[in-house]
Length: 429
Image (spheres, rainbow, N blue to C red):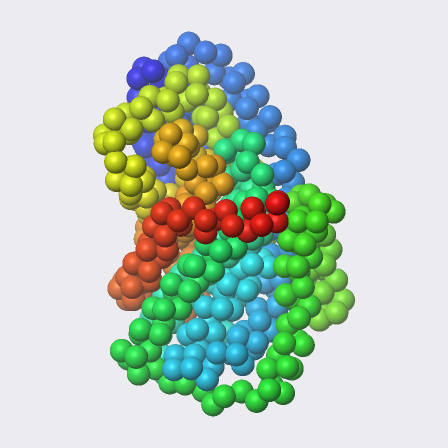
């Protein structure tokens, strides 16, 4: 109903313009929308805020966040970089390719794009600068490649999407993300090869077999975490939430006991940062549950779905419009609130167009990842500029080829369902 939606939208936009935290903005806007509709606003907001985070699946988020912090502080990215450099350094622009592969590997074990930019960029950007690569290109590359960690499992945003979508298997999402994540990584690698030819990037002498073996030996324990998580989930030995807890135990033993790169005295600070990050995410999830209830009660998703479907009978044109809408949303909104807000709105449209919930989840996540590298929100972009000591205005132009490559990857994920379905179908059958 418009008398519910209009006050909600007006208050929400006004609060965002006042730079109010988005979770608070969602809560207050929902309260006003419910108040206008005549519902018991206080009860609905409070109950949905509490019940929205009462989910066993959501327990995976603090565990994966903690595992990511432990790995980031524990120097695991350095070991993965040594392996990637030994394998790819011989090619022209090989260090750029190694950077991309390192971000993919580290993202796949940490599940955090910002952590990948910070951890990988802190040593990879200076090293590429020293080898003659343009500084702003290096920052742009690291910032975009780091987003693959949100597509390649494990991924916190996949859990958020599963909660927002309702009834979607986290295990299927994890499996479905493998190929799209590789596709996005390959597209970024192709841009690196193009830039290497255009700007005559250097190459490194081929690494001897002994160096490759040493690098592989040093990184094998880090890479085993992927096998530990996905293998246990696929075998049915434990759930995604239990896998997240095992990931924490494994990361703790690896970084504190085996590598000794994290001191016991540093653990309380890591736990504090984990608690802060988790609290923000959970508050946002709880707030969005109240908003979703209000929109559903007012029949807003169905109305918007019918309106979008009425624009054209061409399936591919509508899917392109959805992708462009998500691209615009990602520029101005972080990925977690965007998933929580737009999943219940756009999912009926996707279902009407024959896109199942798992594929649509990967379309949304891959698309919104582009927004992590764009101003004004662009978490990865700002972290990359901070680590690389440059300005957004200088780095942004270097982002353009990567944006194009990533969006082409999104269109491929949209047009070819088998990219997301083949691995879940292979495992489940």
